Length: 88
Image (cartoon, rainbow, N blue to C red; front, side, top):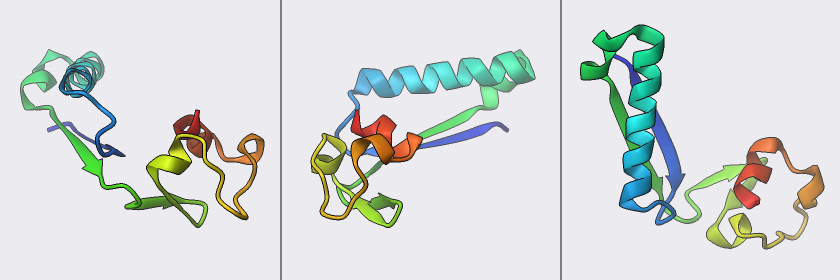
């Protein structure tokens, strides 16, 4: 049974966005494994509370993800690709 687990910042996706994630992920697994996988594909969209995760030793908050700079945090240009993707 294919399984995908997405962790996203809380309150950043609409119900329609979540539906798109589920549908497109299911489509991707069906494309890779064949249509037999569609009926058993499980997709979990898990919302993480503000401040409930971190990257590079820094706790991520909605303020940081929306462009605020932490004291001592690397500049936006030097952040990792993962971190930059959330901040932009």
